[in-house]
Amino acid sequence: MKTRTLVKDKVNIITLGCSKNMVDSEVLSGQLNANGIDVIHENKKLDHNIVVVNTCGFIDKAKEESVNTILDQVALKKKGKLDKVYVTGCLSERYRNDLLKEIPEVDAWFGTMELPLILKQLNADYKSELIGERLLSTPKHYAYLKISEGCNRTCSFCAIPLMRGAHVSKTIEEVIAEAKKLVSMGVKEIMLIAQELTYYGLDIYKKRALSELLKHLSDVKGLHWIRLHYAYPSKFPLDILDVMRERDNICNYLDMPLQHISNNMLTAMKRQITRDEITELIANVRERVPGICIRTTLITGFPGETRDDVEDLKQFLVDTRLDRVGIFTYSHEENTTAHELIDNIPAEEKEARAQEIMEVQQEISFEKNQEKIGNIYEVIVDKKEAGRYLARTEFDSVEVDNEVVIHSKTPLPIGDFVKVKITKAFDYDLEGEVI
Image 1: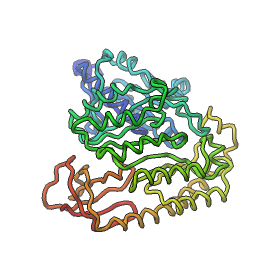
Image 2: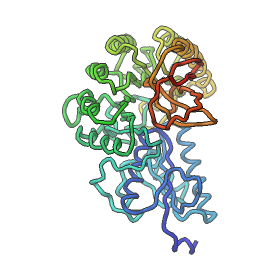
Image 3: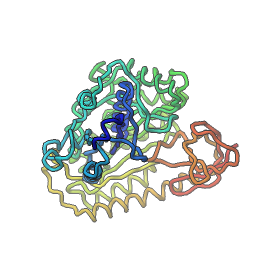
Image 4: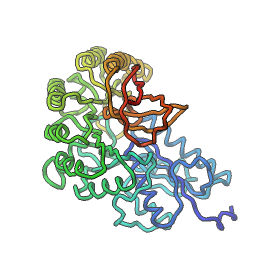
C-alpha cells in the first residue's frame, strides 16, 4: 500500500442504472478532469487506485446489482488493489444508513445531489462555471442531455422522488449552452432525458416549456438528431408534436412510458390518466406526426393485477401496434404508497406474464419490420462489431431499440450518417446495404 503514495491517483467511475446516472458520472468525471485528476469510465485495465460506484436503487434487480458491484470493489480493496472505494447514486441516497453498517469497508457514501462533497473527498474543487464540461462515457457522436432533475409525480410504485427529490428544471440557456458544448466535442445526436420530460419549465417558467426548448435546441448548428425520452402521458403538451413535425432534426420518435392500460391498474398506480385518454393521446400523436415511432414501457405483476388486466394489456398492444415496448416486473418498494398493498403475485408468475406480453409485441415488431424491407433510411453508424457495422434509424434509440446491420466492404466512419436500403427484417433488427 505504501508504494501507492508515490503514484498519482487515478479514479475509475462505474455507472449502474439509467442514462440519468450516466450523465451524473460524466459530470463528475468532467469536474475531476478540470481539477487535474486522472479519471476514466469503466476501466478494464485495472490500473486505477480509487473507484466511485454510481449506484441504482430503482427496483430489486438493480439494487442487487449495485450491492454486488460494491462488494466486488471492496474485495479488490481488501486484496490491496484499491486504496479507496466511494459510493454515490440512488441506492446510496436511499439506504445510506443501512449500507454503512452492512459494508463498513466503503470509505464514504454520497447521495444523488452531493457532487461538491464527492469532489471535496477527492481533493477537488467544484467548478460551477463548467456547464456542459463532461467526459463522455458514450461514443463521441451521441450523448444524453438531462434537462431537469427530480419528479413531482406520485406514482404509487415509484421510489424515484424519494431518491431524486422534487422536479427542478434547468433554464433554456443552460440546456442550450450544454448542447453547444456537446456539439463542439463531436456529438451529432442528443437524447433529452429527465424523470419526466413533459413537466419541463413548470417550476421556473410557470408553464410547460418543452416546445420552446425544442425550438431553441433545433437551431443549434451541427446538431443532427434530437430524441425525446420519458414523456409522461398525463397532461401531455401536444404543442411539442407541432415542433417535432416542423423541425427536421427532431427525430420522429417518442418514448412515452404508459406502465399499464386497464383502468383499475392505472388508478392503483396513480397514473392520473385513463385508458380512453391514452388511446386518444396516441391517436393524436400519430395524426400530428405521421410515421412517428412510439416507444413505451409497461409494468406487470402490480398488486391486484388480474388475468383480465393482462389480457386487456395484450389486446391493447394488438389494437394499437406500438413500435417499441419494454417491460418490467413489479418491484415492491419501501416507502411508496404501493408498498401498503399486498404483493400478492409470485415472482415466477410476474415473469411469465411479462414473457406472455412480450411475445405479443414480438410478433407486432416482426410485422412492422417486414414492412420496412425495400425502404431507404438515413442511419447513424454506431460501431463495428464482428466484421459488420451496427447503425440506427431516427426511429431507434441506443441500446433499447432496433439496430440496422450493415455489411460493407467500404469502410464506414463511426458516427457518420449514411443512406441504407433495408434488405432483411427480423423480430427486433434489420439488415441493409449502403446506397
